[in-house]
Length: 368
Ligand SMILES: NC(=O)c1ccc[n+]([C@@H]2O[C@H](COP(=O)([O-])OP(=O)(O)OC[C@H]3O[C@@H](n4cnc5c(N)ncnc54)[C@H](O)[C@@H]3O)[C@@H](O)[C@H]2O)c1
Ligand SMILES: [Zn+2]
Image (cartoon, rainbow, N blue to C red; front, side, top):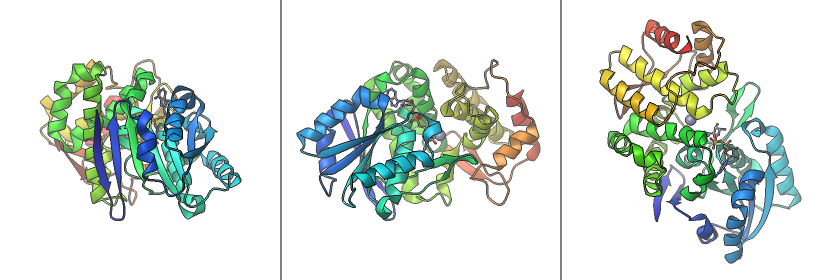
């Protein structure tokens, strides 16, 4: 069971393979993309322990030489220090422009390896093997790379496309439930912003998705990547339409920030709350969504996704503070918060004019 998709940008194109148990035959796919026969697998201890041998065996079978670089696990290591570590190790190994890096892990590894690849020898090839649902449907596709600084998340980074993406949904069986739901927030986002048919399919197959049915999971990953590919093709560098991928994110990032990025709320949890806020705001702005908001809310609740900040999380903020944080989001242009809102299910738009009173009333509802 394998599906293939092509991502095209102005200058590049590459394939995404999505399937069940395709890691064990990944060597063959990788081999076709190599210039030299040498790759560097960059991963963390946990992923290496779970799936490292499977990848290595497939590389060996295809006579690909490999070395591995293990980095620490966690968002807190997505920084310049780790980039330093990766690039020094590569230089010690005498990395060549024809060599290839393999990002083997979730979004943290994908972002940091993509960034390292883009600056190493002014750019060497890299391949994404995403191992979390979020990275399979979002971060591994589209070529955004980045690291965090104390000033904020992903403020340093590049646009740099991989040569190939291999998404094996069988790897998701070891992923904690919370991480799965975090990825699901991004999946439903595609339905909401641009694909009503997909949204209806997700709603209709709620119980299959809940039970983690592989066939349905492959389909969900495939249709998410397909939507993302459409957007990236139109606007690789987020000059306009790509911004709709941020539905729920400007609100969500502010929630993450007022919670001090603590683990009590994951990115996906903050985004699912952010999506509910964006839906409420869309409705207040006069878009006829009332009934639909309840359908989405019910769906989230059935899947045990967050629709509001849980009572046990105490957040100290005010409407103004929250707005200020939203204002510092890097999507803000000319000191004005642009919001991604829905005209209808499956149809997003960028709103740069809206009622400030409505915005404040939405924030008030969710922070209290
Ligand atoms: N570049 C982009 O376009 C883009 C888009 C969205 C998010 N991101 C970035 O992605 C990052 C979040 O990615 P994430 O949610 O994948 O988190 P993550 O990479 O931190 O992975 C979550 C946890 O799951 C573990 N893990 C990974 N695969 C596993 C598996 N198969 N089984 C068991 N455990 C596994 C990881 O070691 C980690 O502890 C953030 O840094 C965010 O900024 C980037
Ligand atoms: Zn996100």
